[in-house]
Length: 155
Ligand SMILES: Nc1ncnc2c1ncn2[C@@H]1O[C@H](COP(=O)(O)OP(=O)(O)OP(=O)(O)O)[C@@H](O)[C@H]1O
Ligand SMILES: [Mg+2]
Image 1 (tube, protein in one colour):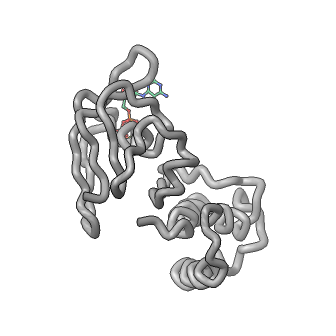
Image 2: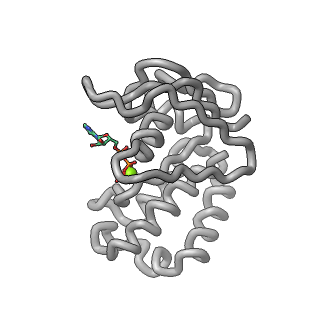
């Protein structure tokens, strides 16, 4: 199993949002979480990547227990988060945003090849690579957020 949530409880302060959430994601599978506004979808993703504190249960990723670890450790196991609402670094260039997406990697050739792939998929990012990310349109910024996540070459 690539990702396993086992009876996860999490929330914000006294507000409990996730109640005994159990979820399995197999390697190579796509899993969609569907639900009404406020159901806890974003909270689930933020809990997986260590941004929301887990109060009970555990999360395993690719054989490692990741619950309780800080986000910068989790990302090193190859788990990328593409946040809704972009959250790119506005005062850095498009290129710098993409380079930071690969900050855990040492394979220079692989990083270069993946950058080319991103530029091939999202032409606008190649054209605007030296501009500040904040100068992109909303949709272009979301494309950058997707490309930045993929630059990790996530598992
Ligand atoms: N930072 C926060 N502090 C307190 N409560 C929060 C915080 N973020 C979210 N919540 C609450 O947690 C609950 C779940 O929110 P969440 O953002 O996970 O929902 P969602 O399923 O992603 O909804 P949507 O479809 O609208 O994106 C909501 O009741 C929300 O008000
Ligand atoms: Mg949401």
